[in-house]
Every structure is written in structure tokens, then in C-alpha cells.
Image 1 (tube, rainbow, N blue to C red):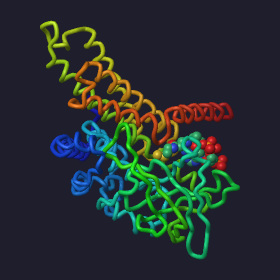
Image 2: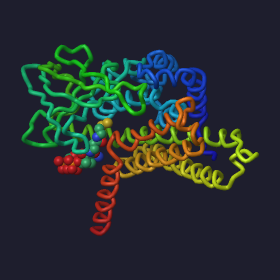
Image 3: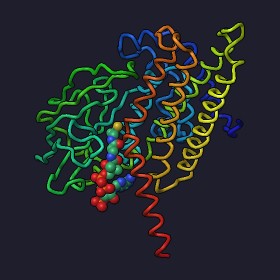
Image 4: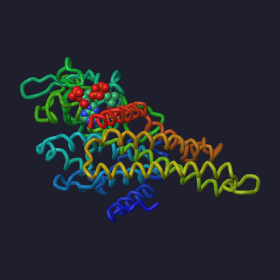
Length: 386
Ligand code: COS
């Protein structure tokens, strides 16, 4: 399919394809096996200016679009979505600054991120996952600082990132309306990290707890205003979910490529297995799902780039659909590889493990369905009033 990519987008795609094939593919098994953080690849991505895609040129970035970012994430994720995650978890951590911070904060932090400083987003807690409004981490105003206490859980890039955007309660009594968003630097006294999690998939990415114990954050690091934290978080997720969708799309497309290639090489009953209708029908269904996910993800990304305002429904839809496609396509890819597919020598079992998280993080797919349905109902009610 020709999606009418611009010349710049084709350059981003080709650059990411080259990095994925030449730099990431030879080491993906090592990082998946060891769970080490892939700093050597992060450096390659930084040298290629990929951390600056979404950052405006005035702050040292490329000034690119959501569509540019989607193309980069898809291409890198075709080969290893865990390694690629260092890049787009940084986008997630950067989005609260990009979308809601003031000029001083942007000037201070965005140029560092554009150069390759990793960022991370701290919302989730042990007791606050889908119910993001029930976080317990507190931020108490004291002189010219806020004092943070509490623990964030399962934070991607945790411990490796330099810059964290963190949601904490400044007024518990107000519920979601009592949350505020802060920028916290890694070396701030009182800010430490829990153990690195041992995960099913995306093992090259670092997931840790963020622990705040009387951590004093300068009042200048409050994003927007007190009480805006939940809205900052929701806006961030609306803007970043197409990135998860692109990751899922990349995983699915990578698994499809592997399955087609293998089905031509593998012979049974004296023929390549791609000549059997049972395999052909599977490949056809997988390809149709991948292409429809791509069409939806690209279209939503382009729509966001035209300054679309109410992103929630479409952003949730593309994350939901592409991640369900990734899970189904990677599972079928393992099936086509048969016994070999279950072995670590072949990449498809890793792709299946990696796909699973895309149905869970940045909001489970059950939450995405809820967001879509509530928006549908709201739209219908608004249309009736007219
Ligand atoms: N953009 C801007 N504002 C939003 C918003 C959005 N997308 N979604 C909600 N809000 C506002 C609401 O308008 C409401 O404001 P008021 O207090 O002025 O009415 C406030 O935020 C609270 O909204 P709501 O009552 O809908 O919140 P809920 O507690 O019911 O939660 C869901 C809504 C479930 C959608 C939300 O908690 C969610 O997205 N959960 C998943 C979190 C997630 O993705 N976690 C992954 C971790 S990050 S990797």
C-alpha cells in the first residue's frame, strides 16, 4: 500500500530500518536473554537525532509530527520493540512537558531530551492502575518546594531516565481534581529506585519502582497548575497511545514477514508449507489484520497532526485494535513456525511475548473499550441536543 509518505517520512523509515537491521537485529537475542539495558543502541538512536522527532525545532528537536514518530516506532519495533521502547517511553515521559509545560520548563528540559537524555512517566502505583485517579503519592507545598512521598510502580525507563514527569496528590480530598504533575530529575535527594522487574517480554526495556521519600522538588517544576495533574495525565495518554499502537503494528508486521519467509523455506510432504491452503488462509488473515491496523494507526496519527482536539476515542481505538492484532498475528506466526516457533532460536516467540504488553500498558484494552464507548455515548447525546 502506498500511504503517501512525505520524503522526510521515507527518510525516517529508511533510517530506522537500517538501524534495526544493522544494529538491533544482531544484539536483540542478547538483550532479551539478559534483560540488560541497551545503552549502545540508545546512543545510536540519539546520534541519529531520533529522540528529537516530536520536539519543536526551537527547543533543539526535529519539529516532526505524530505520524513521523509512528513511522519510526513501527520500523524499530518490527525488529525489537523492547529496545525501541527506550525511545518511545521517552516520548511518553516528554509529552506532559510538550503538551502542558510553560516556556521556561520547555527551554530547560526539551533540548536535553532531544539530545538523548531519557525521560519516563510516573503515574501508575500498586493500587492505582486502571483507576488512575486513586493514586496515593503526595506532594505537599513547603516554602519554595513540593515534598513528594510515595511509590510509583512499573515505570518504563525507570532508573535509566534522567527526567521524570510524575503525578502526585496535592489535595487528596479533591480526588482526581487534587492531582498535580511535576518534573523530577534523577539525582534529586529523596528520589530512589526499586528493583528492576523481571518481565515476560520487552525484556530489554527497564521497568522499576520510583520511590519518593521527602523528595524536595522546586516549585518551578510544577506543570500547569495545582489540580491539573489528572488532566495532564489523560492528555498525555491520549497523545501517546498511537505510539503504543505503532509499536504493536511493528511487532505484528515483523511477525508476518517472518512467517511468510519461513513458510516458503519450510518443506513438509515434499512441498513448501506455503503451498498448503491451511497456511495460506492464516497468512492472508494475518496480512489483512496488519494492513487494516496500519491504515487506522496512520490515519489517526495524521488526524492528530491536523490539530484535532478531542483525541480520546480515536487514540484508544488505534491502541486497542493494533494491540489485539499484534497478539493474534504473533500467536499465528508461532503456529506457522510449529515446534521451531516455540524455541528461542527463532524470533517469533519473543514477538508473541512482546505483543502481550501492548494490550496492557498505557491503559488495558478493557479501559480503551470503556473510553471508546463513553465517548460514543457522549457524542450521541450531544448530537441529540442539537
Ligand atoms: N482529557 C482531558 N481530561 C480528561 C480526560 C481526557 N482524556 N479524561 C478525563 N478527563 C477529566 C474529566 O473531564 C474529569 O474532569 P472533571 O473533574 O472536571 O469532571 C476528570 O478528568 C476525571 O475524569 P473521570 O471521572 O472520567 O475519571 P475516572 O476516574 O472515571 O477515570 C479512566 C477515567 C478510566 C479513563 C482513566 O482513569 C484512565 O485512563 N485509566 C487508565 C490509566 C492508564 O492508562 N494507565 C496506564 C499507566 S500510564 S503507562
